[in-house]
Image (cartoon, rainbow, N blue to C red; front, side, top):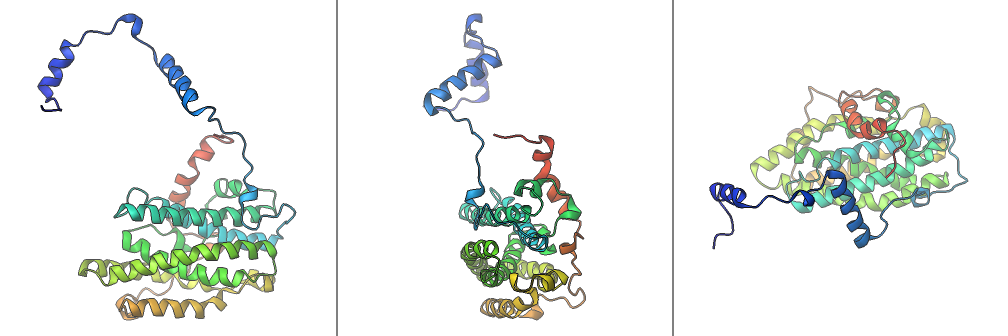
Length: 316
């Protein structure tokens, strides 16, 4: 027996069905009330009270207050993680396979956790929460490097960006875990363990794409060509690092470790620098650390912040 009716049969069935008695018809409010009652019977009370999440934050110390310089530094790193997390979240339901939906979502959640910890600590200098810093700053107040705000592009572009970001973050958090600031050191010690997975994920996909079909290799090279101009900004020292001293590693001090891993991965993937470096383009001037951003950050923030700004103070 055919379990599906064709359009004609469905229409005839609808005509033959007796009309529901008036007493059985219910308005939307009545139906909603019935559904709520049924849900309460099955699930109990599912209302969400005000939850204090500060204790979940890595390195959280209720008595620790960041200085202005430490807050600025933590905000830079927190913005890097927040914006990259937002970019990666876009891939959920769009990745090339279900396993990658999960992998990219988990990386995004790790980065969001790093962002929360860093922005929470940064906010102690100005009595602002991590939510205040995420949703109520305008574009020029963000301090992320340009690499993190670039569009996802195709999957190979995202992997190329993830490779650069993860190798850099591994070097950064390894060094920052030795910070003389206890809160930054604790945040970095937790983050470095998670970033190790991010790096392995990006390395394995780089090798698969570069060593796969002609199409996958070509796309990987295009991704590297488009994103390598944003590498130098990650390693530029400025006056903030002079003031921080032993609290934070100088970005330039991370370059040697980055280059060693970067070169090893490219060599294993049989990618030469000449395969993706365009000498006519050169390195980007960047400026994200000082609030000067590419045209891509504004639309991302509009999407990320719209709910909080449309419904200020809303909880659920």
